[in-house]
Length: 262
Image (cartoon, rainbow, N blue to C red; front, side, top):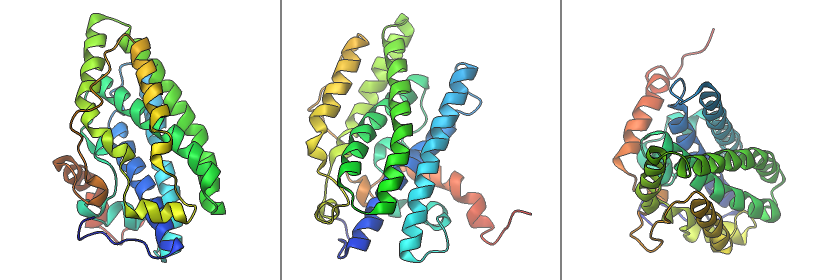
């Protein structure tokens, strides 16, 4: 762990850390997907991507709100707008630039497949009533994200020569960032001991099987599972892209911290 990390010592600290990790992933990826507003390949998909982005940002807001309640913060805005990039705990997969439509679909599919299995396990494990209630509510929307993105992977992979090439390149480009999905550290171990998290290795095979089966059905070559994997984002070692994203996202709120809507 980096010098910027502290290992949770209490159940509340472990809960806050878990909430922030889940929320940061969803805020940052939701922001990236929101960049498609008005740019979708067709009107129906423009609306679908906007809804997925809103779902993820809504999930993040609920998780932040609970963390703020536990830590005595005024509201969830503190976590979204007043932390620097080194303080964010999202994985690098979520912060990569928007890319083309195929890249967006590949990223949503890989992340949603992971979230699908993760939330299933968390719902069975988490004994905090408020946290578990959020997980159950959000899981319903995650299932839609997975179904929608998987359908598009099949459509692009088994479509035209151009769509096949683009989705294949998207998976190849993004694959080195998937390793962080299953990275675990001491904070995760503390959360597991407190019945607030789960061992990610328990469903890694299920995630891999779903991804491989989908890619093969889409007539796509499965990327090398043993290639180099980017790591360290949970501990502040982000790509250069996160700082630029936050500069855009946080500018107004930081410039006018006391502003109110009238």
